[in-house]
Length: 81
Image (cartoon, rainbow, N blue to C red):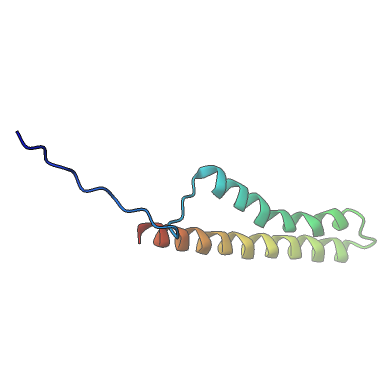
């Protein structure tokens, strides 16, 4: 009886393998800079400066979250080929 060989999927050296731990680590590293203005916000001398630093921190958070989403979608696209 002849055996039918199943085609094996070729692995390229450029194939990216990433999982949830990688995504979580990337998210933590990208969202970490948003904490820097918050550290100085509680040391602000005026209420106006406090709200400026708070808004700046939220802005950094939003930009980095969008960047993380773009990188995630790009990695999915690259992983699919």
